[in-house]
Length: 391
Image (cartoon, rainbow, N blue to C red; front, side, top):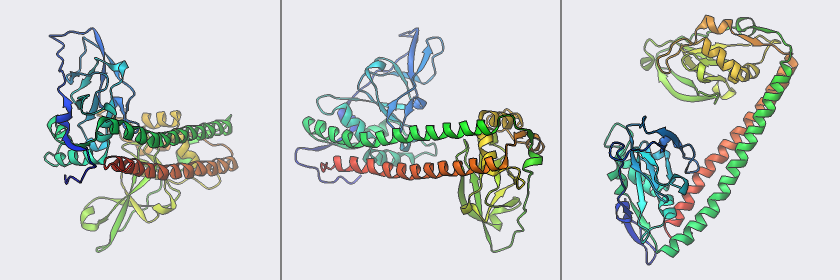
């Protein structure tokens, strides 16, 4: 890393020079009846906090539970460090145990505050230094030494406290807006669910094959042309665009045209919500044979209504039953099984109204996603200014 000029009184220091050694733990030598265990999944990486420590019995100690943590420690997730699984240990978790998937940074109080160390570790300044170490291995992880080699600017302690107060004043506003966004999204989903339940009262349930039969539109490959693919995200999060493939890249792979308005299922991951409605911008894209395309019959059903139904608890349960297999995530939705799933068929006009409501909700979510992207750029900019002494 190229070190820029620091304000007077500041110095560059490696993390190993401003942190003190931590204590390892061995259940055989120091038995515990139970403890709270912090692993990577315990971290909320958007807020940088520990949300869900796991209560573990001393008889069932995970193999990676080897590090004792104390109040004020900074936990730095060493697997995929770009995900910023970084958090401060609070007093409630003092003397508990964390996974070896963290580099435990215990600040030397004479040199650096916990808060300055935490913000430094979540900054691009440190992450970019640590990520360079990932290139040494195909496994997306780094070791503790690579984290400890990262250098950060160290101002005098009073200046650290002043800058942390400025950082937290600005980033707290972002967190407030994010919280309002989450609350709004929850309220909108509750409204949708309420209207969905209302229009389905007492309606007939009929097989998918009668309401939205499956359609295949085979692509006739032509030499010299490329074919842009479409992907489907799990958990009902819509479609995404993949790169275009040449005829040579496709080889014997069968592909099919997708039209806007199609109801799409990824037959391998449908059971976990890999369902979507093709958008206008998805026109002229293709899907592999793993995509099941259904087209609702006019006047009987709408794709957005059926999409929402299949993301409900009942819809996902039916897709799970129609997707046999138990080897991890390898569960395939059968064509005949999907065709036989029964779905509610409320009044068509009510479905149209529901679909318009759903589109407004989706528009709101897209705007929120764009705003979130702006926030994700804003916070690193604030930290960059702070570490140059410009805040």
